[in-house]
Image (cartoon, rainbow over all chains, first blue to last red):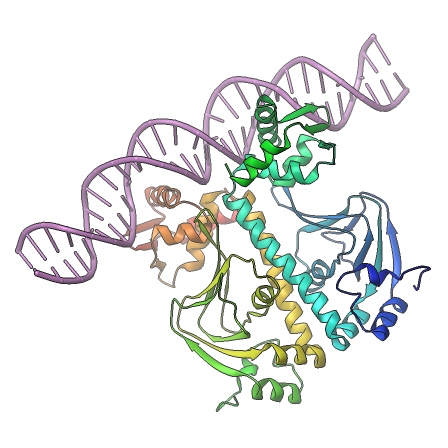
Length: 224
Length: 224
DNA sequence: CGGATCTCAGTGACATTGTCACCGACAGCC
DNA sequence: GGCTGTCGGTGACAATGTCACTGAGATCCG
């Protein structure tokens, strides 16, 4: 898997510091995988057998409740790894989270055996792995905090700002936004109407456009 | 730290499988710590420098929101380790979780250097560590699910059942129960009144007693 | 003992959010 | 054109969160 040009390990901030022989091992023992958008990469009844390192695209990880409702837990972007989710799934069978390719995804698959070998040999690799775990766990702490204590309008404002492109446009439905926040569609509709009434956003079918970004930012900053 | 009788590593399900020399290393390079109840073991502005393995007692980990509200994230019991929380705190300074000794706690402290050495050398130790991470993360997934989607009466019922002793007694205040669930005291008071009205619990100052355990279990099972 | 003070729990009014049932508007597809 | 599915709007109601206030026990100390 030594591609032309810069090898992929250089694109991972934490991995570029690996020793040359470790990089070589990682490069030679891994394989490239590509999946189309909307592929379910892992989920109930579908465990991954490899650790993935994302080169391109994003993977959305969401929890599906037995009540049928859903909430987005986090996303894995290019330059990040799936190690922790994968590790969880390997250790515990009774999970209910699923990972879905939001875009076309290119990733490097590292077999479990190679992963374990690398953790054993390389201190830099260990630091990469533990940093990924740590980041994920602190993010989940903040997630719990947000879901438990933050007002809906603030959370919606946050997501709109995070999902908007440079022009302030967001191509999504109220339904999808409600899954982002783990709430009901009607709640999103009501909040967006209120935002529109205040002149902060414009709506059309399947699309939301931010008109007054500073106003939304102010809402988020002052959390109410 | 080679105590009399069985060494402490034998009390950890995942560690008893370590190779003899690894156990020896762990035993010789670690120290015993004891802290009184209510000690803040880690928290904002107080990073721990060691990984802890709990021999006795429990540690409560809770998130403190900037709004002043709190929620219990999980507990660490005897036979479990603090590795992941510790790892997080070492990696990220801007956390807002804190760990508090609920009881008197006896624990073994393993320096970071020794921890890293063990991860490098022992496959069994790696499995122990990754299993701990995996368990914690899947638990946090479920926690998010519960906070986002579960009804308050069901969640309160769960906690009452979990916290009650054999006689069904729970020595706690409504305030403390509200922190367990991340809600307001008034909400707990109202729910407990409803439970009492139905004859499921008895209340007195600083104490709740379960009278009809099957009824509560039924509430929890049928989640409504 | 009596009073000051604190914690604990109860209450009502109200705001926010979740649930349910239903409706019409729009887009794609024969 | 009509059929069908998705998308979004609406009103009524239930559940939960917020606020201000109350009194009942516990503790402390004079």
